[in-house]
Length: 100
Image (cartoon, rainbow, N blue to C red; front, side):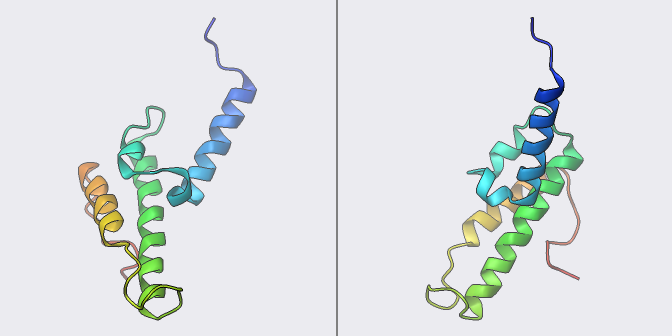
């Protein structure tokens, strides 16, 4: 018997909300977002865009010397590139997060 109960759906919704709100603390790598079986491509794109936004903000904070590390040395370049690659893989062609 493999039926979903209302509590399973609530848990799935809570997890999805948490993943959308703070993907950088929920996932270890953008490939985990791509592999989500119960999410649509639009949902995956929304998660990745939020992750990208968080990384852009972290990068800006580092460049403005708002972090404890050396200015401009926040080590977000590679994760930002990985998130951007995942967005491209999903067919997202919009402006990078944070662009106006």
